[in-house]
Length: 90
Image (tube, rainbow, N blue to C red):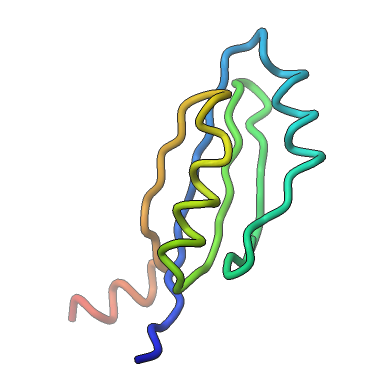
C-alpha cells in the first residue's frame, strides 16, 4: 500500500547560549532518506527554526524530528495548503 506524502511543520527552539552548537550541528546534518525538506526558515527575533517537510515514511519522520532532541525542544504539526483544506470542508 502506497501512502500519499504528508507535510509537517517542525519547529525547533533552543536556549540562546546554545546557538553556536546548534548552528554547527545544522551544518553537519544529513536529512534522513524518505524526508523531503521543502523549505526552512530561522526566526530573526528568537532562537527558533521552522522546517516544512514532506514524507510518507513514519520512521524517517521520527528520525528527522528526533535529531535535535539533545539540543532543544521540538514541535511537529501536520499541515496542508489552506485552499485544499477549504475544499475538503465544503
